[in-house]
Length: 197
Image (cartoon, rainbow, N blue to C red; front, side):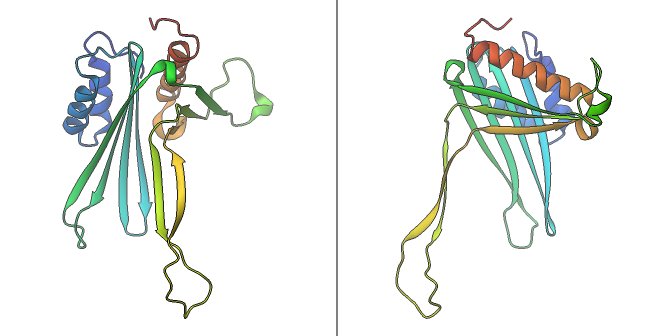
């Protein structure tokens, strides 16, 4: 869903519907908004499986006036036995004018049967603003297995912008249409500098 209304009721409902620590997510998003009224939003929950572990991640994109608020919440095991869990939260607020790219990638099943109104199977939304930089470092090594020298570190530095996949099969057609509407509103706010309605 995308429209939030003056008090953000729809945003609150979508966070509740996602079911991933909803009170925590709601409070963190409200803190990031700092009293600003949400105009449009997109809430996306992802679940990934890593051998015998399950990880969940929720992203909430909220457009409020001329600012895009990005909130991420992950859960991870806190101890070796997996008995305790910790939630990791990050928020970023970006002036919509700094967003330089809003990309929607569409997937259509059976394109040979395409007619106007043909349902979209999924969309991938990518928002780029050259935001937080993520450093992934690890000790460098050489090919000599006997070498004990310190070779420093190697790794990658990547800009941490947002890419979300919304699938009609997994999330429903309403979620796909909501993502498209959010992208339109963000594009208007960011690229055309037009006021968000």
